[in-house]
Length: 196
Image (cartoon, rainbow, N blue to C red; front, side, top):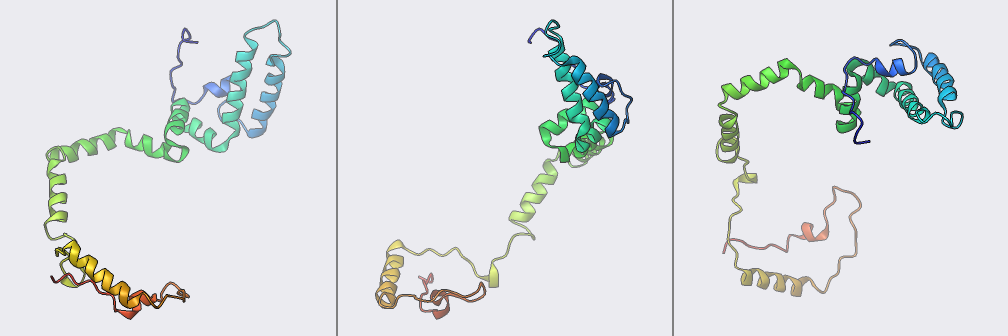
């Protein structure tokens, strides 16, 4: 198998039709009729003396499986075996996108954007600096700052006193809908001060 020459991927989309002895654009019924005729003729069980019959039968089955599937047939008719290879690698829904992005005008736009922005460094730098430090920096709600230091000892002490105060009354009700708040949030008794 390593000795065999690897087939080149074509973009014409005619080889599978030729295997079945049909013209490009043949109807589904013509494909089915031709497949049955050729499959019976080249079936390995009927051609025990011909070692090439099994290879020919595999080619016929492959051609029929692709041409009988509407999506694969459309890809094959439009992009040939290269399109089938791309569909296998990236998924059938991404074939048009792949060929659009590999077109000469998409590559040209990509190169022009690179030249205009200085090899994309300027664009990346502007976006990162503006979003992290500039006008587009995310604001904390109500202007509060969250960068307070609370020592672990103070936090543990607050948790311990809250548990001593609230430990006697278990929560027995579940919220009935998503907008209802639980008793822990609704009471407002638990507050962990970060004022220091």
